[in-house]
Length: 329
Image 1: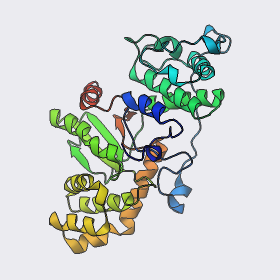
Image 2 (image 1 turned 90 degrees about the vertical axis):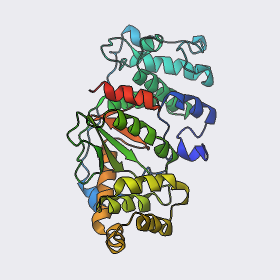
Image 3 (image 1 turned 120 degrees about the horizontal axis):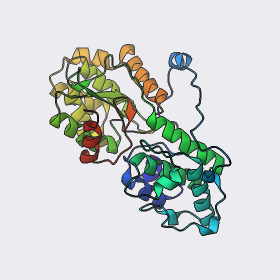
C-alpha cells in the first residue's frame, strides 16, 4: 500500500486511516483539496443538474438521543472493535454526541446510531462505516456540526438507490440478470485491480443471474488512467473489452501509449480502427459521460460498486461481496 497519503483522505493520521479502513472496501481517493477526476468538458458542466441537498435523518432535538456527553467520560471500548482510543477525549465526546443525534441506518432499527453501535452482534456494516466516517471527519478537523452533516450525508448516499444509463457500457454476464452490479473504477488504481476477485466470485457462481457493468472513472492524480480508459472503450468497439481490461490491470504500473498499442496488437485488433477510435471525440465524450454519472452518484473514490443501484459498503472480501449479491437474488 504505497503512497498512502495520496490514496486516503486521512493523510493527517496514517494509523487512524489504516485501522478505519480495515473493515471497509479499500479505495484510491484524492488527497484533501485534490480533484477526484479530470475536469469535465464545458459541455458536461453545463448539462450537470443542480442537486438538492437532503437534510440527514436525525433524532429530534430535546430527545434523550442528544443529551450532553462528558468528554472525559467516554471509554475507549464503548463501541466494540472501534478504536476510539485513537481520538482525543474531547473528540470521543463529540463522536458520541454525533451518534446520539443520528438515527441508526440498520434495517428495522428505531434507535440512535450510538445505541446501535454498542450492540456488536446486531449492528450492520453501514452503522460501523458511518461511525468511522464520523471519526475521520473529527480527526481531520471538521467541526462537530460539519461532522454530523458528513455522517448524515454518508448514510443518505449509501441508502439511496441510483439508476444508471448502461448504454455502451461493457457488461460481463446476462444483460437480463436479476442482479445488476455497476462498478466505477480506474485502471491505475491498485485496489481496483484487487477488486476483480469480487466481481469474478459473483459472476462465476451466478453467471445467469448477475450482470457486471464497468464504468470508467479515471482519477486525476493517475497519469495514464484516462489513456487506459479510452483504450478499453476503443477495444470494446471491437468486442474485446474484457481482454483489454485484464491486460491493463495486469500491467497497471507500466501503462503508456506504446504499451497499450502492444496490447491492442496482441489482441489482434484492427490497429487502424483502434487508433482512430482511441483518440476519437466519441470515446472521449463517453468517458466524460461515465465520469459524470459517477459524480452524480457521489462517487469520489475507486472502486465503487452499486448492487441493484445501492452502494456497496461492506468488507473487501469475495465472501462478503457475494453475500451482498445473494441477498438480492
